Image 1 (tube, rainbow, N blue to C red):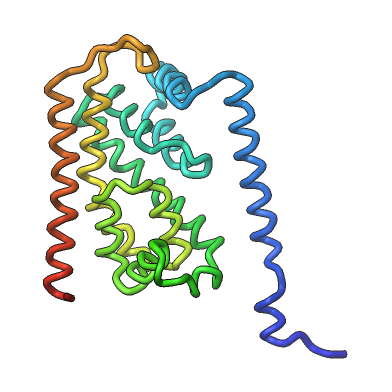
Image 2: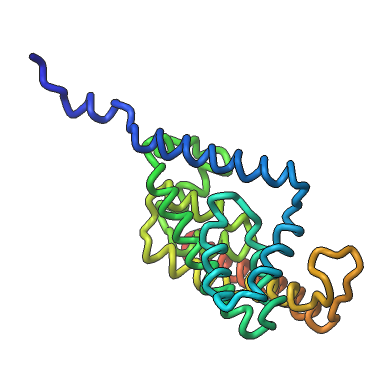
Length: 235
C-alpha cells in the first residue's frame, strides 16, 4: 500500500478551512437577510446598539464585544467608533474605541492568518494588490502604518496582513499607532452628533467637527511624512 507523500498532503483539501468558510458565509447571509427583511440600515443597527448599551449595566463589555465580532460581518468600523463617543463623550469614548478597535483588528488578523495560504504568494507585482503585498512582506510595520494613516478599509488591511502572515507584533504596533488619528477623527465626528443617532434631523457641534477634520488632515500629513522618509532612505 502506497504511503501518502508530503506533496500529496500539501495538495489535499483542508476540510477545517472549508467548514469554517461555509460557516462564515452562512453567518453573513443570515445577518444580511435579517437586516433586509427587518429594514435595518447600518445606522439603524447602531441606534439599536446605542439603546441597548446605554440602558445595560454591562454597556462597556457589550460594546467591546460587538466591536470585536464586527469584522466577521463586515460592519463599518467608523460607525462603531462614532457610537463610543456619542455614548461616552469624546475622551472616554475615544479611549474605549481605541481598545475595542485594536482587539477587533486582532480578530480579523487571525481569521486572515487561518485562511491565508500559498494563493497569495505569487501575486503579480504589477498590480496594486501585488505591490502592497510585497511591501507588507518586506516591511510589515511601516506599510501597515501607511495603510492605517491612509484610512483604507480597516478590516481589509487586517485580513490582508493575516493572509500574508505578517509578524503579529509589528502589525499590532503599527495598528495601535496608525489608528490613533483616524479613531480621534471619527470619534469626534460621533461626539459632534446631538440628538437621535439615526434621525435625519440632528444637530452637530461645530468645534467637534473642526477637530475631526483636523485629525483627518493630521493623518494624511503623517502618511506623507512616513512616505517621504521611506523614499529618502530607499529611493
